[in-house]
Length: 423
Image (tube, helix red, strand yellow):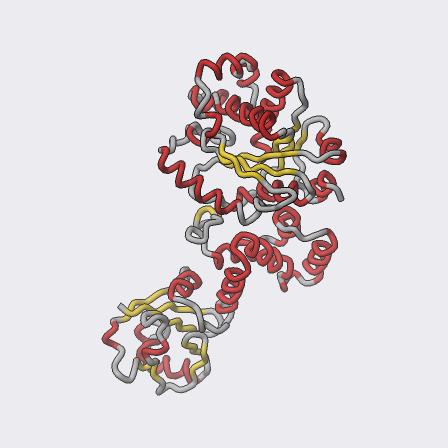
């Protein structure tokens, strides 16, 4: 498949301007996507446009990731019902640094034959004067044209209003496209469907000022089959930064994908080809309880974002939830894995030279209502310490069994976990 056919097959094509298919099929193009630095990390909602650039580069085209150092000072009104909080220059610089590092996980900026480019629109937006911008750019757009765009129209019709600052965002993005066209021969802009109006404004500016053809292609906004915005969980956004969302929780997010969504996500967010995805789709239909498609989805995306080492740690952490070995896990790993289970603080002085009685630990953590009940649980094989079955009611827990000298995992039965912390 050529790039256009692949985008179609993967369900990534939402809308396009005239001539996109021919341009992508018959020639090598340079295309870009902008990323506004509203946070120090991108989140999974950014993955579809990122994968658009990945596929562009893999098909031999030139991919440009444009960091919005200039537009980030303004704020994109697209899809927003209220004005954004303006970022300080210091926060903007911090966010840009984080985003640059994350994009390097996906795009090859070092290729000797077809390197991707990472640019910052502050280079031209912060150097043009207001008078020059109004004369050279603003004169080509009527207020009526700008009001007709969804990003502005919805705010205007609801009566929420829009500041001149955000109203001007469309012109800034159009100017970005023009500058990339002039400096890097860029003829294609891609993005989410909420960017359609801004992208078309850029193609119009290139036509009016340069007499050349610019193209636009947008991807669908991703939602789950339950109608929830993709990437939103009860805990908040799922970030690409491992310090904000751990690789274990990142993997778990994909592992928990609804059966109705998993094939779509395999097409959107992985580099797997048609035959592999078809096999996974068949396994989903034949044995959905095995969750083979979800496991593969989680593995592919986690490896791409965090690397193979962190993927293996995430897989080990997942096995721990089903009784796997805790050896080698750090205290932070254990806290992350068992963040949602009941936890209990025990005074450190309960541990004597010979350790702590297992029966006392069970009673103190309210796993059993009394010592007799605790002994029955142990003798019945229903108690585990750090996922090791305990069968002796006279057993003690040694200090050496504490993870980093402070944490312990008790389990009753198959899934009833308790995290113990010494204080």
